[in-house]
Length: 254
Ligand SMILES: O=C[C@H](O)COP(=O)(O)O
Image 1 (cartoon, rainbow, N blue to C red):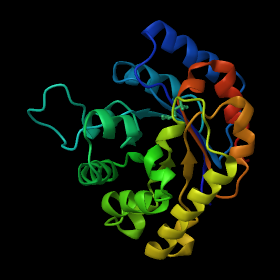
Image 2: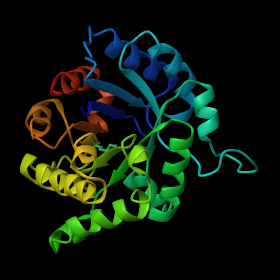
Image 3: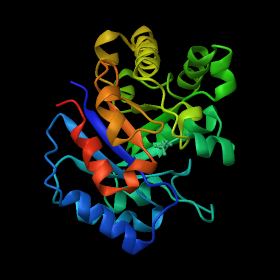
Image 4: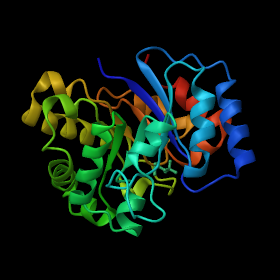
């Protein structure tokens, strides 16, 4: 049975003191995260070690890197590898966020290598996909996202694909306050799941968590997460406010 997941993406925000306070406040909020749920914090790289140590006492709570490099080690100044993450207890990584694709020119092919590497090291890739506004305006979003999946994920084996979490994040809804309607989210999630089913079979497709990202907040999480193919969210801005993120966690399906 696929997991329901609330994933925080702090992006490039917070000082260490602010990060500690936020994480501790959320963890101390009497969270009851069931076996069928996961809470993930994608924190800035300098805070990964501290955050990974802090969550060891909390069941079903995990720490993610916001990015990795596509090689395991070597002369790649400034980059962070999956091997390093593994060695500090980090077990998830956001791969292919639209900000990485846009500002750092990360291609589907490059992201395919990163996903592979995560799986080799037993790190769960949270693979992001999603279209920009001009693509949606000409109603090409399904084909666009399908190509992202095909080029980055569809050479994985049946065992491998089931380790991947997919996050659908329409770029026009990220940080804009403009959320996709729950119907738009469901429509795309159903499309993604149908593509997974066509490639790997229905049973496997039904095992894969598909998160929605784009202006999720406490006030809309319940409705969006309530849709049958939406298995939680990847949350930016609202994950920086403890009460908001706690409410978002509570909005997960049980
Ligand atoms: O990774 C998270 C997404 O980019 C969503 O960000 P947002 O919740 O601030 O719109």
